[in-house]
Length: 93
Image 1 (cartoon, one colour):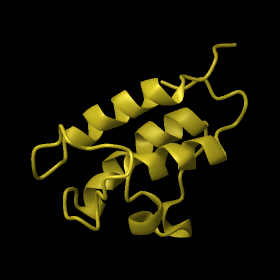
Image 2 (tube, rainbow, N blue to C red):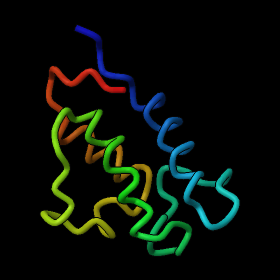
Image 3 (cartoon, one colour):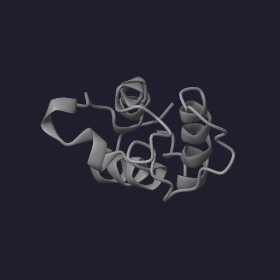
Image 4 (cartoon, rainbow, N blue to C red):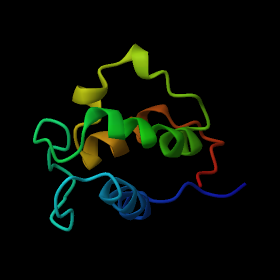
């Protein structure tokens, strides 16, 4: 069974994905850069991140069951979400 990608690999994949939806230059995005609260990314744009997250936790993300703007407001928070909900058998994409 393939191992989970490490946090660094996930970080780079997520940065590339978020860069597609960022309103401004995204090269300065680090793990703690606010995405939604700084208006760098619209909260609706993060819905496009949900399928990517689902692939890494091997489960459906019920976006109505949590505060998307709070729990996914930074790359670090999205990575923490993946680590929290990832199943041991999730292979990641």
